Figure (cartoon, rainbow, N blue to C red):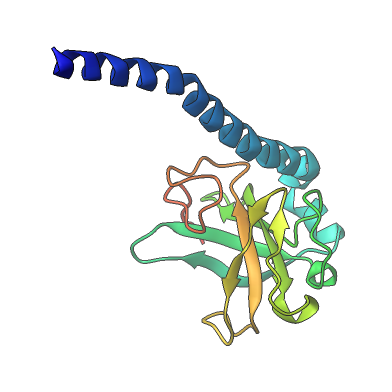
Length: 173
């Protein structure tokens, strides 16, 4: 009898907590969707790579891909933005996927700030999303920096803010 009563009380407690958990998940998803929406609205004009070039973005490093974890694409970086500030409407890099017909398709952006541009022990973020620290020197030959990818124009099965995207390919480069 006590066991049934305990199980009933536990069930009631779990059911009572469910709306709170769902609300937290919905809020977290809303925060993610907010940054993706901001990025889409701010970068829609760069669907045409020529407009990105006219705005000061230039390709660097070629198409970045991983042997076992998808690709990033071709990063078009605006060097004048690398020392900040971090503004969700002005990403430091626009990321394009090369296509077989020679066109470039905008798939995402990357926010980048050199660590030397920030006070020591900084933890920069974009709309509440912490940026990842990449120590230098690194495989890109860059000094230490912070970065955050946002896959605003191409779905990423790993998440909107994961570096590598299995739905992006460098095969057409």
